[in-house]
Image 1 (cartoon, rainbow, N blue to C red):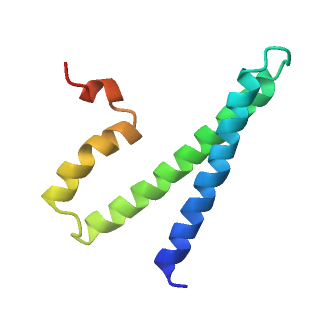
Image 2: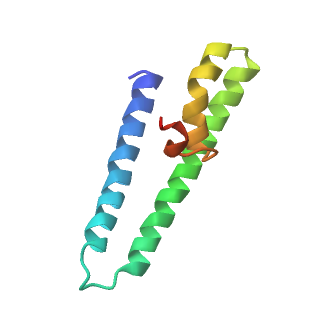
Length: 98
């Protein structure tokens, strides 16, 4: 397998396991008979930790590409809205049309 195939496999596995954690929280929240607040909060922290690690990876890739002049104005313009959402500088509501 080449490096891109391995990266794709890794990202798919991350997505699969993160989704499972998120779905577990959804199920636990819907069960009012159980007191699962600590478990739910732990799951939320795990997802936040994962998200921050992925943002660190993204930052590294962007810095690498920028340092080698691999980013152009189109990349920056097209990716700007997505990055604003990822870095939580804006929310989806900021892009909604009136």
